Image (cartoon, rainbow, N blue to C red; front, side, top):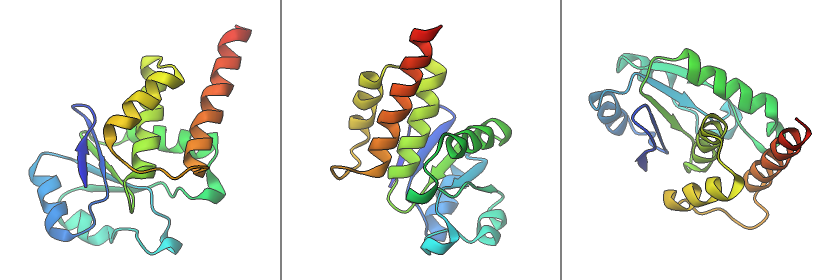
Length: 148
């Protein structure tokens, strides 16, 4: 799966070398991999670099779904050559994290975020930790905005 989100951001679950070659041929400069090594789905950094792509890893799992992990992802996006392809095993983490940083940049409400998320066509199970994390993120930001 490969999906363009903006001119500089795409998400997906591409893992095969041939598909990664296409990512590079389409002008992408960086791959941000959200799979933890222990999961067994992380890309081989050497192969990614052989394709002239920067490789950045920001492991995201149910154990580290925190604002700090989102911040690390946001910093990786800011510091990396663009355009950027963010991937994970299913595309779900890539979609959620990418849309959350766009929501912050563009001032989206949770409803706007959910509408954008629906357009991705990525299945998310009920009670998904990522869905709960996104909801909590918006609740915290709404509380901050009300307090200002």
